[in-house]
Length: 123
Image 1 (cartoon, helix red, strand yellow):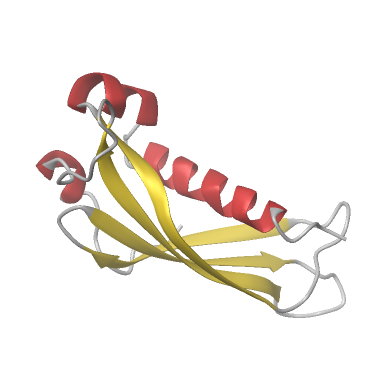
Image 2 (cartoon, rainbow, N blue to C red):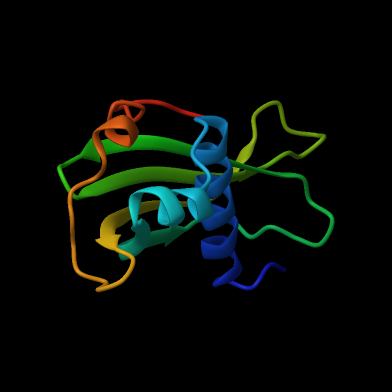
């Protein structure tokens, strides 16, 4: 079975890929804007286990967007051949803060980035 903490890794990777799909590379964000995103809160609920070699799907949706933080709703599901719908393994609500890369203090999300976030976006 998948170790419970690994679901957080899967969610992190999905958020990074979601940002990349919006044209936001995190290393360039630090280099050009001087900011990075860090996890502030994570609330995870587990339902069914995933197992070795399961195909997993991790969704990302913006639930709330503020001046210096974004809250994501995420779900990890697995496909099961004998079931018509994916099986929900876990869901989470992850709050990510925008911080100054040098001081690690909260700062506002750059406007060009903020306009790309819209509540309800899913991937």
